[in-house]
Image 1 (cartoon, rainbow, N blue to C red):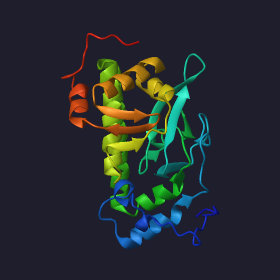
Image 2: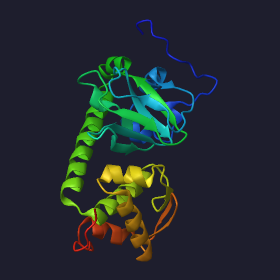
Image 3: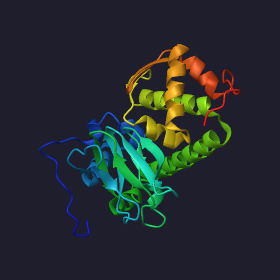
Length: 251
C-alpha cells in the first residue's frame, strides 16, 4: 500500500457489504471477495459535524468521499466574495470526482449536519479498478451521472422560472430520498433557505414566499425545515411548466 496506513475499524465493523447504500455506490454483481478488497481500502473517520470541511478549494486531491449518513454541501467562491452553492449531497452520493483531472479541488465541501462519510483513497481505488472490471465500469457510470446532473442544472437555471426551479428541487430530493429507502414525501431539509436560494439562483425572500404559496395551494406542509409533500403530481406538473404561473415575476 506504498507505506500508507489504512485505518482499521475492526472494533466498529461498519463494512461495505453490510451497508444499506451498497446498491447505490457499489457496482452490481461485485463478487464477495471483491467487496472485501474494496472494503479494505475504505477509511471510515470519526463523525463529522455541521461546519466541518471534507476539503477546501485549492486542496490537493487524494480521495473520493461517499456520504454514508447526513448531508454535505459543495460550493465555490463567488465573484462578490461570497459563495456559490454547487450541490447538496445525500447518502450514497460520491463527492470529489471533479478534482481527478487536475489533482486539485476547485470547490469546497462542507458538512451540513452530523454526518458519517466514507473516504476512498483514489490511488488505491485506481489500483483496484484495474483488477475488477465491474468497479471500473461503476466509476464510468458515476462520472456519467455527474455530467448529467450538471447538464440538468444548466437547464434548470437557464430555462425555468422561480416556482419551476423550487418544484424541481423538491422533486429531485424526493426521488433521491426514495432511492435510498427513505420517505419520499416526509423529510427534513438540512440546508437553509438562503442556501437553497443560492443554489437555485433565487433571492431568499423568493424561496420563502414560494414555500408559503405552495403550502397555501395544498402542495406541501412546511414547518421550518420539516417538509411534507402532499401533491407530488402537481409538483411534477409545475416542473414541466404545465401548472406554472409564468406571469408571476420573482427576483
